[in-house]
Image (cartoon, rainbow, N blue to C red; front, side, top):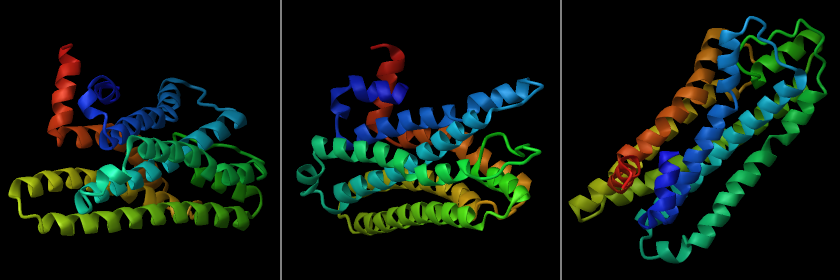
Length: 268
């Protein structure tokens, strides 16, 4: 919220990079709230129950926000690619209006992508015992529950294909963009400009590595019967720890953002 406030109140930060960062920070707040509050309630409660409707809603919002995060990371990589590799074209291409269109695309498409898998999951048989061996209604445990009642290879295939397509398409796009960026940074004649560009890109790559590393382990093959302990750890990692560290990684490596945050926290 400090980052969102800093971008909102500081007119110097009304640029595409910071608008994307503010949206990304707000996304992380929503992402954490889709699972952490219920997890904390379960830790303190003796019953630890959730209705089927609430479970599906949690699944839908959790995955939709995760999809939106993949898209935002891709758009942020595109923004840095334009700014560093094509600096003369950057102000012409990446206007505030175009940036706003990209933001709307990320939010809308993110919430549309996972509709089909959720609808398919509502049609699965859950004959009991309906005990989810996880701290949220995750895709893998739900598919495992349904597989106890009847084979669901079609649903597993569709969910795995859609997850893999999203993850690998955005991941390779991001890696490709930053490869071109780093190549341009190495060729920069100015040492100061090169250092600043490299600092920005390294923080972005750190976020991408944290998020995609844990997500790939979990969702490339959902319901494949991977070790429960490992599944819980990776889910906890990208759903709680990664959103916690992401805004700090992006902000603490950026002098303008640090100055704006000091003004917000200092009340000036």
